[in-house]
Length: 406
Ligand code: PLP
Image (cartoon, rainbow, N blue to C red; front, side):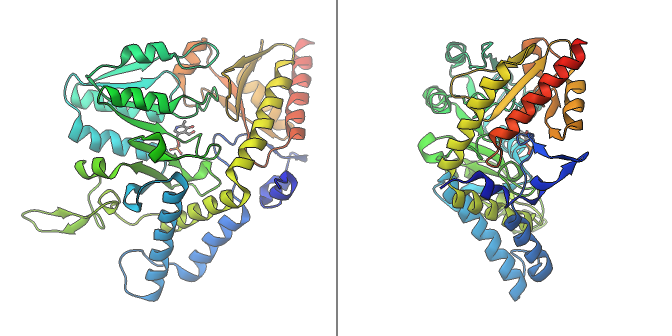
């Protein structure tokens, strides 16, 4: 049984007061809170077992190595990868995408090739490809979205041709909440010989993922958006593809033998994991995924569905509200503006009521340009949010609307 009040007890921060008001944390798209057990496991490893991984023969080193590799197993099972060699630990989604842009880019991209992204991507899934285009002379093409936040799939189909080498697409938009038809996109891209990178930063915590069923070539996500620590993330890649890609960072752990004449590289996934990883963060990520599994992702998804439906219905009724993104089946994000009020003022006034929302361009400048605005306010939900918190947000917005009307 999903019991949101029980779940909230696992997250001590949710009992904090902000300016004397109960915290209403609605900035989960930026980062989620961590349950106690994630912090406790990390504490335990720092305080009792800390020792560098993959290097020592002693007890502590083996203990951390085992836990690090256990976390890889947990991630593998969670996204249903074929093997642990397909799970590379990085610092987060941004680093995962940059890794692909550099190494896949090095091996697979030639002048005149095309990379396709969508207009609703986070900057992390735009800028690395632009940098690749500058290095390699390839061309970036953009799939537009419709005003309701749905991707224009006709425009996408029209962009598919044999020059396209890679499609980068967000599973869920961090601004519009749109859940993109990634399976359809992957199949269409494969039909012209292109590879696909799925940015799952806003999907991993909401939607069950199966990389084999999706048949995506790469998938990236961050630990801190799925109740895990900051500074750790994952790149999934198909083994056959990763094997054809050169390493990115050079250093310890990614080598087999180092000779001044020629160095040979380690096997997957270590080829892409130069230097000491954030192994305690990785262990924390494993624990976070175990926590999500213990609650049940299906139950979380059902609860979050209720939250988003309720939020859209309630926020829509607020006088002067402008909603951005209304695609059918959208995920846990509501972005909006209030007529005549700057988004920073709105965010600041909500903050004074203890309500934490995101304001600004939300790392998605092209989405702002689409709607001709300089910024938005975003409320984004997680498993521990309640209908009462959405009521608090709406009451806050109504109050602000009244103040500005006077
Ligand atoms: N992609 C999407 C869709 C995001 O929402 C985010 C973060 O908000 C990122 C990429 C970047 O994630 P990180 O900053 O953890 O690397």
